Length: 428
Ligand SMILES: Cc1ncc(COP(=O)(O)O)c(C=O)c1O
Image (cartoon, rainbow, N blue to C red; front, side, top):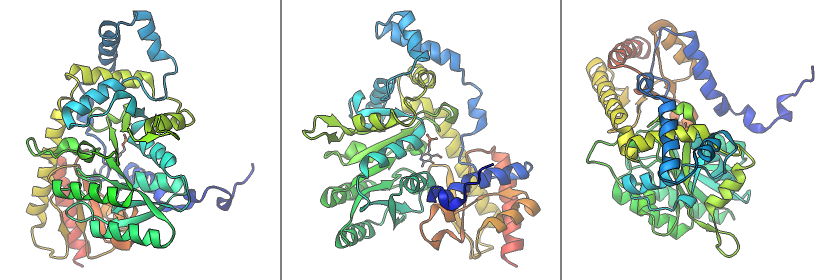
């Protein structure tokens, strides 16, 4: 059999980042009895009431009654190739207007194969020159740094603070890039409960970030995967809702509010493109998508469309029960850490996010794969090492705990085990 040595393949394949998710899956499969705080995946109990056929029928009904399509045409739409831009754009655009105050026409949206594809398409479209830099908050979701790696895009990290992003450091990165004949083309942020940091950007910081984007001419890539978990009455407007100058590209997903197996996400890209401004960034993304996944599965879009229609076209309604469960789990996790660890180990600290799926913990020792093996094998508890989320070694002594995949009693048991592990291994 032909041998393809690593140096003959794309450099990203030698980057540990690309192996980090499969490593976690592999550890989880070896320790099925362990309580796992590793996956940031939706809770399986939430899939129980999902009836894809009912949602497909609901969507077909919408095409026939509201859009005036013949039953035959509507049915064929779900089984044929579809437009690269998507089928349910109007429903998503209406929901974004109603729930988030994002006012974008349906044709400024592209429905993607999850948010992950949206990230890849946006990077491919925006990064036209090797001198362009992508700024990311550090730590940040490895899906964006991984996509940048696949596309050979250089990344500059900007510290995440308790306020979301260090704007002075971001400005300094822009100035330095300029001095080197480069430019920060875009900055990736998750303003509402970042993964892994759990940080939410206050309104004033959102506005300052937008001012900086205008002043320095970079685009903001807003990833809103976890905004739906905000405590009711304490939601903040997404950056895109505050954006008057078209500097924000907004990316969302139905993975957490509906179910991840549908692989449906979206991107709002209303920026003008074309030599005369006669096109939009969404047109360009759809053109790229036609060469990547061609179109997002029409059947899957119909399921999501039907779910939205059943919930009065509202993202908030579709996600309400899930948001309650995740907030409950997160509060339980934070409380259990307080109960089982308290201030017994002063060198072990953690944050207390108000939303999202994640708590991050600082340890006085390296939290690497070897320590995870000990934690799993001896104490029956799994977590995620933070180093793949960081651009520097700042994540080496940090771990991420996810509350989304567990029942409260499992969280309790897991934290008990984690506390024993930390007291025995770390203290010694
Ligand atoms: C911050 C963030 N963005 C995007 C995604 C990916 O979403 P999708 O499953 O729609 O590709 C995730 C998944 O965990 C995430 O945490």
